[in-house]
Image 1 (cartoon, rainbow over the protein chains, first blue to last red):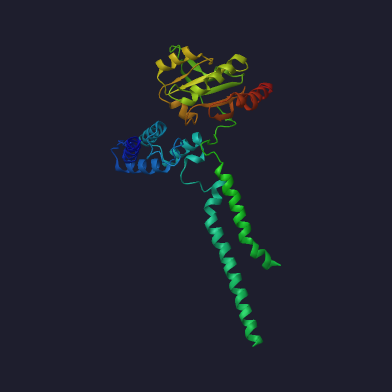
Image 2: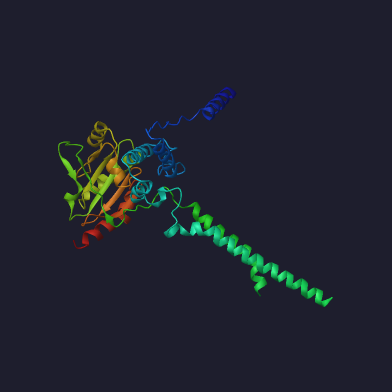
Length: 141
Length: 180
C-alpha cells in the first residue's frame, strides 16, 4: 500500500517538475523595424483558443497561423492599423488586448477619469461639511 | 435623510458588485460573438475532399438556407457531434456543407466511410486560410447562412440534438420562410 502511494507521489512530483516546452517563434525579418512591429503586434493580439495568451505567446495552431498572417502582411507593406482591422473584421474587438477607445469599450477608458472626478466631488463635499461644522462649533464657544 | 443613504451606500455598492461578479462566474468567455452575424458570408471556394478536381463554391447554394459546419477528425467535439449531423441530414431540411478544417484528408475520408457522411459537399481547407477569413477559431463551429448568402447565426460547440430541435431547426425554418 505504502509502495503504491510512493509511486503516485513520485509521479506527481515528476509531473509538476516537467518543463513546458514552448514553440519558439523563429520568424525573422531583414528589417529591424519590421521585426519590432511584428513583436508589438503579436503581443497585442489575443489568442482566441487560449484566451489568456497573446498570439506571440501561444503555441496553438491558430496562433501560429495568425502569426504567419501578421508576418506576411508586414512584409507586403500593410500598416499596423490595417492588420488590426484585418483581425477585428474576422474575430471581433475581443482579439485586441488593448480595448478600443470607441463604442462600447470607451467607458473603460473614461472610467478612471470619471471615478477620480467623483471622488474629488465627494472629498470636497466632506471637507466642506466638516469645516462648516468646526466653524459653527467655534461660534457656539 | 441624506446621511442615512450615505450610511447604506457601501452596503448597496457591495451587493451590486456581488451580483455582478456572481453573474460573471457563469459567463462563457469561450464563446466569442462573431462579427460576421448579419454580414455577407466571405467567399468559400475550395476543392472537394472526396473529389479534389471539383471546386466547391458556397455561392452555388444561393437561394437556399445552408448549414456550414467546421469539422476535423482531430477535433473530439466534432466526432461527438457527428451522429447529430447524421440525424440532421436525414431530415433533409437544409444542406450541410462540411468545411474540413486543417485535417488529414485520408483520415477524414476514412472517418466518413466509417461513421456516415452527412455533408452535401466537403470543401477541404488544408491550410486553414479560408477558415481564418470566416473567423473560425476552433471546431466544431456551425454557421447558418440565409437565402441571400448572409450569415445569420453562429453556433460554437458540438450541436446536441436538443440544440438542433430548440435553437437551430426553428431558425432554419424561419429563414426558409423569408422571401429571397
